[in-house]
Image (cartoon, rainbow, N blue to C red; front, side):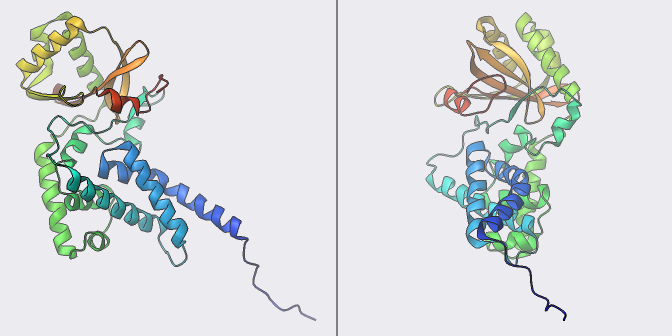
Length: 306
């Protein structure tokens, strides 16, 4: 007698939950990348990703054809809510000296160009510009231009038509293009310009500093309330660099910062600052320094127990 065909037994709930968690982990890196570009804060990005997991855990994945797209959309919506809440709480506009949380890594031991492929390798220059966008503009630009999410999907998040959402991304794209020059992506050339800047600063060589700085260079130094500064122009930046190096005693360790050449300044085993540069045609057009002790203490920094 032929045995009747039966469906396989349903997996135990614990097994189903474990499989769902495994599927989520496959997308965690991209979700973190989306959230970091949306928020500019590593801690908030991690919180947004965790909230995405909690929503998936509650809703389950039944009926979800494209889990990666669903998760990206949920993360985008969470980040949009956080940005709007942040904007509503802020009494003053974001200061021009603000530097987003940097991702600092030890120098790669293999091909340095692989650093640029890391999911969190987005330049601080771009993140600074993104901080100036309206929340909906930022979402439209990040999801569409950086992660290829269709406008129809983004429109549902921002509660606008696809055409209006396309306009949001277009406005953001123009602002990004106008504010961020076509930076040199080569890590070796970035390092050469940064090393030349550091050597000239230590030597107090004003002319050598002018040679490596673009005439319209901008230095952003985010050191916390009352200590931050924005410096424009090669001559002013060069003079500031010379003055700083006269009293500097910190050890400058070469690192990558968001995939670009950078320095981690350490004194007495404690981080003093993180610096990175934007390089165009061999000259530095932007310097970004984070020296806020409270924010530095929250970062994962190579070679330090922070």
